[in-house]
Image 1 (cartoon, rainbow, N blue to C red):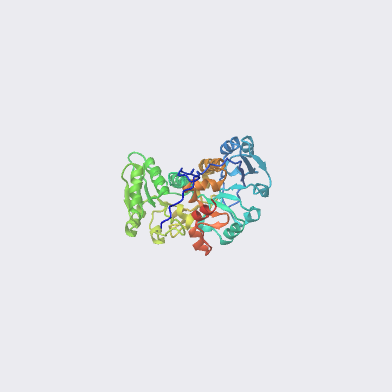
Image 2 (image 1 turned 90 degrees about the horizontal axis):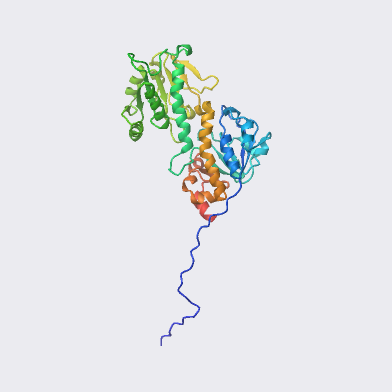
Amino acid sequence: MAVKPYISTSFNYETLEEKLDVKPVGSRLCIGIPKEFAFQENRVSLTPDAVGVLVSNGHEVMVEHDAGDGSHFPDRDYSEAGARIVYDKAEVFKCPIIVKSAPVVMEDIPDLQMNQLIISPIHHSALRKEVVEKMMEKKITAISFENLKDDSGSYPIVRSMSEIAGSAVMLIAGQYLSSFNHGKGVLLGGISGIPPTKVVVIGAGIVGECATRNALALGSSVKVFDNNVFRLKQLENNLGHRVWTSVLEPKILAKQLKTCEVAVGALSNEYGRAPVVVTERMVADMRPGSIIIDVAIDRGGCFETSELTSHEKPTFVQHNVIHYCVPNIPSGFARTASQAISNVLMPLLLKIGEEGGVEELIWHNFYLREGIYLFHGALTDFYISQKFELKFTDLNLLIASKR
């Protein structure tokens, strides 16, 4: 005999409330800006105007004495913006959040605090395993300039620095083509009745695009090389008209280098060394007094004859061709570069404050996750883990486990 089901009077079929993700109350941030001592680093990560906005929103900013000197932002400007000026680097590093315009180096490690948030470049080519390991030990959360994405999915700091480098290239070329700098004595762009100056740009990325745009604006004849046909098409679309382009055929490249006045190297890999596409023989066949500007020197250079130079002694001559191989070109235009970096970091820091911390922000902001390479000491960058044979942890799993 079947037993009838018993239904309790307390049982009901009403829908249960759904638990929504409640936005936390914003927190007050304490941000430290140390003075950079890295080679030729003149930039500062936050300008006095950006500091003023952060302070107005209730955050505290601590700036090391003379941190903005390289960009011509004196301590007085920071002080008037509401920052606290300190003379001890260790004091600055006591802040829970550190923003730097140069990568973390071994000299910084003793001053780092447990569970600190650091926003800085990585510079993959110069990164050392010991630095990563020490940061992991101190449970650091680190965001890199190179991989930091905005809401459009692009890399705003990388783009800004590349735009500065690309725009600066033609200014540098014009300066060193002058007779007084032992150049060929030609005016970049030329004038009516005289054939235009010939410029060869190797690489159709952001640097190459900006260099091409500026060279065309000056009236030069520009020829662009890249093995990525999509990039060449994109460059033409961005410029708004057709330009002479080619894939990297050695014979065609050598022929164009023979007759040009300016050659710009703007090729690079995402990680590792830039490919060398111009041989010493090609350089030897170039016109005497012409100039090579190897922007890719940051990653080893794409001219075989390239050697690292400095802002103090930027050029050398080989095969009667001037070589300009200064790494970190944006640092030579430090004030503009600092403003560009600050324009990205200031809104990011405001969002971190509004959300109540970086952990809360990355829960909602998927693009920001791209920039994180350490999360509470766990290495979340696959390339770095492969390079140094360190344990990789998926950031999405870490975030999910903390909810």
